[in-house]
Length: 332
Image (cartoon, rainbow, N blue to C red):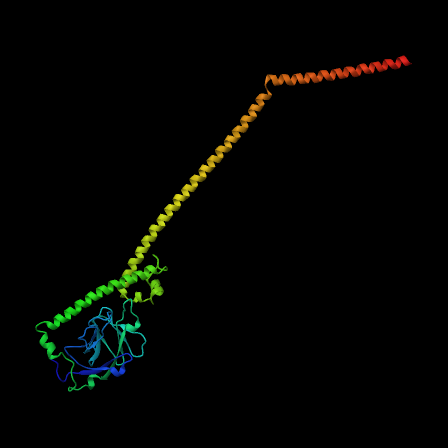
């Protein structure tokens, strides 16, 4: 039971671009029920037809945190795909730690979800601006307190409310399993279709190449890293096998080329040796013919005939000379 004089806070949540449709809420310190945002119809702010948003995505409580003098408005993430908190004056949202209460300053914006499905765009993120109209120290006991209704209290003993929550949670788990599997497959396809990703690619290099792709942001960082490491390890294994096969094929080709060259060299040498042998055999046969007895006799007969003819010519000349000498003497 919440005491009537317990500190309370009054604030509003307005969707981006719909400030005139802001919803007003009051929370009291120690209240049994928070202000909830999610996909289920029972939420204070229900966001339908967005599977990236959990059934109960996040909650807002008034909490007295350690070290704080006054209670503060806090957000708690319950989701699968995360809740972001964009502080006043900041362009970026920080991710809330799941199941941890985080202070929400006046003028902040809650972003749900942080991670989108592969087929979603930034427009599928819902942004709720928080405007605190009455801080805890200014609240009085007459302000309406956001507590569980009498109907909710009556339903709890027979377990109906708990059963509804459990059924919604089970449905969400099934949806998330299907979505996670689909997101993993799309992320794997993204890696597979990127020619720049190899077995040597680091996670940081892949993020630079693919960080702006929807399929990259459709999975949680830890899941993305796990899938990436698995994929790169597989690629590296395939590349190593391919390199071994290529080296083996090259080695086989080099050996064949060397064997072919050796065979050609052997054939060339064998042919040259045969030609040299044939030439040597031809010279030996020619010398044998020149030195045969018949050839020697023929040569000797030829020289004898020449000498005989030469002697006859000399004899004739000598005879003619003697006749001419005798003729001169007879004239005198």
